[in-house]
Image 1 (cartoon, rainbow, N blue to C red):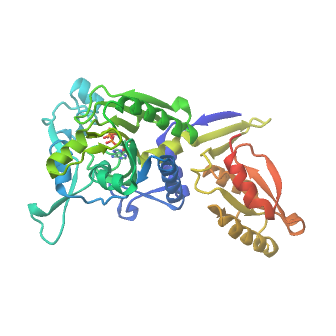
Image 2 (cartoon, rainbow, N blue to C red):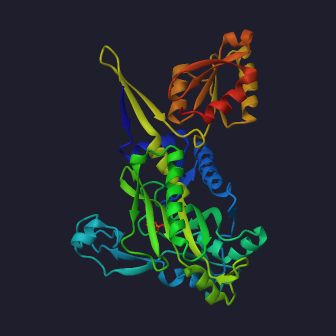
Image 3 (cartoon, rainbow, N blue to C red):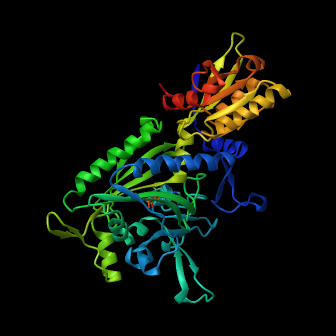
Length: 446
Ligand code: ATP
């Protein structure tokens, strides 16, 4: 058997649309640039991605959760540096009107030419602020301007004291959040890799100055292990140190994933020093120092940040999981089985119920079985076409187990359970099925 991995993002874009992972936003109106909707399978899978991250972060004794508002006091963005500095250098091609970023477009950096038509007739570089603005209240004047947050992190900094005091946690401790962020990106693209509206999963870990380098190292390791645990192949991951540090950073590294367009940032891990809390102290006039009671010490904590895009991780999971198993029979005829080899916790459905026939005696058992399984799992039900085709449909969306109900089931009250990857089959009693699936999901890859 030959295995082929994903080579082209378009394969995934069309599978996503066909099977209901991701649709173009407002498609019947021609779509809206770089906006995407998560369909029946995508919305389930996205919840699983978030749950995996959330549990890894908050099922620890030292991290609390937060769900902050998207709209924040405009001074937050003054203090954070976003109003003055959150911008990309923008260049327009005067020939073909393409607009692109000057700092990440190779043909411009190397030869000062348009990446689309090759013309050298280009505008000067202009600074373009990436924050979306809107107005709060009925008046659209300058006093009513608020921003859609471009990152979730600032919610953590302004709530640092609230979270610390409410939870009575001592430093080192962290705040984790999942939420929408908005950036008016100049060059969005590559499907859901870079969009203007996206979800971030960020954790800010507050530490004593002097211990920051050690915690930076620890978080690098933990984040790497997270990806491996959820099935990302180590050869598709690498760390990349930043050559140029952002104004707030003392150290920064990206976790890069090998997307079809090449290794690109999946997550950023930053040592933000005491920049953010110091800025918010200055702009708000509030003292955000931490008092270390036992050691009678006062200090402004340093922050180690881990920040990953939920959509980007969703894409990485799909890219990493996609495989085509190609077998050739004796006559030389090729057969391709497309398998989305997702980790069972990430897969949209854990189990599919497939009655062997549409006859009433089987569908009544099968529907009951679906309800029984749905008490514990996300279940899919499929009764149309041949069983072979139905197995293939479940393989393509990553369902770990298929359960077939056949005419023997009527007498023996048992069903056949098929494993997605090994394609092994086992007969299991209906009364034992939920416990069986739960146990097998835990040891799926063993
Ligand atoms: P990039 O260099 O790709 O623009 P960044 O370095 O500005 O990203 P951060 O501000 O560190 O990104 O954001 C943390 C994470 O949020 C990124 O690693 C990425 O996964 C995600 N992210 C950032 N911008 C976008 C976007 N426009 N669309 C989707 N995800 C994004």
